[in-house]
Image (cartoon, rainbow, N blue to C red; front, top):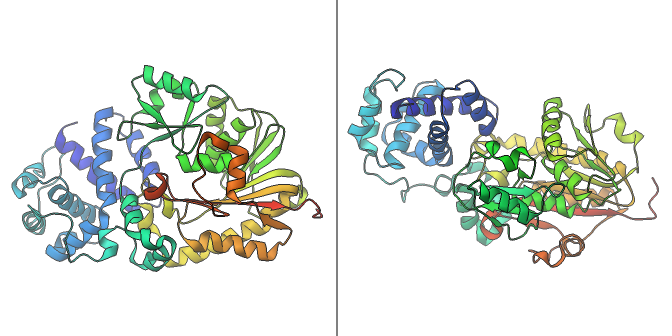
Length: 450
């Protein structure tokens, strides 16, 4: 693809991301499946440019509104993202107005010529820096303005550092599949294919790719043989601290595409049983390919009609571990999913809080006396984390928090120092180098009746 064709593709991809309801990564995959002619370097260049815009969308929109709002005044998503791309070329890549006009020349497969408002925008932004002292904090740190009080309450004095970390590109973390390789063996296999890695500092089963960016992992022999899975270090820790042991019965209640299910099965050495549940059939089906590649054969996939599916009551007090990786705002994953923050609405948080409570109020029934209910989110917001645990414990006094330092000693031990002395685990990008995660381990008392 020519540089102009890559630029046009990036504008079209941005418009599809902002105009649709699917997450950016899924939209990107669908976009390129329909464009097989795009080579690996083309895909990388287009994706990098798109994600650069997604990461600085608030600042780009601020500059457009300040200098030339008519450039994005039409009601079409394509025109709005075309203006964002023009602004990004000037503010993020340092293009001159003439260079922008030269790229938007209307040639075959290239962007249409600039209209008068777009020309004024390119000229006004040339030579400017994307940061400006007049920008409000929510623009400078790229988050929805209405979330500022909740985020400030969650992060306190670390607010600026953590929000800045959420703007950066996340590293690529890999979980080593213990059913097929040790961490050292997986690292050696990756090195043989030109991928340098280092051990993750907290997870004893993780590797972090040394190279910045997104290497094409799906084509690697180590990936095809199931030695590794892409999984953030914080997500690995949730699976480890669930403490699923060989021979146990375990439920992954909100399994999604199965990332934590795979980690649980590997921890159990394929012994015992894992039930991977979800209400969306497509997610459960997508897990099948990953399970086969990983060599996992102790997982049963089950679609639920809702969090109160009759299956839950029929299996009351039958499981040693129940993991709830609860649906949430995903505010801890904005490094990887910068588009997600702008799809959030204030009413979404209230709806998610209600859903989280309904899930907790149903899934606890599955836990046998002496078993554990593990509640996790990829959110930074207290309303989705500690507040939900407090509510649940007030409803179910037969459960009590098992402090994270104790669980860490039982599962990870001296392989890495426990990052907290608090009863629950909160991970953040700036402090811990992971996505934002919350985890609480709730143990059911032995004497509790089914």
